[in-house]
Image (tube, rainbow, N blue to C red; front, top):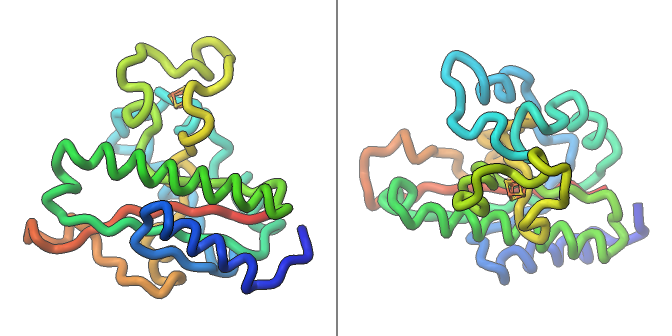
Length: 198
Ligand code: SF4
């Protein structure tokens, strides 16, 4: 890991906000909670419609066990939150917000790599297949063993690694109330991402 002060690392949170995040925080990577049963929800009693469709979703991602190994080698992580009205969360505008989330995470990940955190990894939410490759029949990485069409922005979903987003919110010092808990369309919901520095 590079010899960089906490203050310098914290600049990445400002980068995230400049790119469009509502909030961004620096947390200790050991605070990230990973649960096998959360990862299993992708293909459990209810199977996610995006299961298996992209290289960044299960069963094509490394999952919780590998994540824990990366986590053990990481001291700091950056969390990212975009707040949005519940009405947007369940509208056609959601796609643009999720694309922005991926773009913020990927850009901060690349800035962390430029700082010397060469093994940094970004994680977002939602499937990159529906966000970036909806008009393509298949994920190019899976179908052709080729490079991702949107490698500059598309990042894996936190779900497939069992990352507990509620715990992530709490570690960041933010409210964790979820959109589904509110029936009020004017209330605020959120989507989140993570960049693990290593
Ligand atoms: S090619 Fe498309 S579906 Fe496959 S990983 Fe890249 S963005 Fe996701």
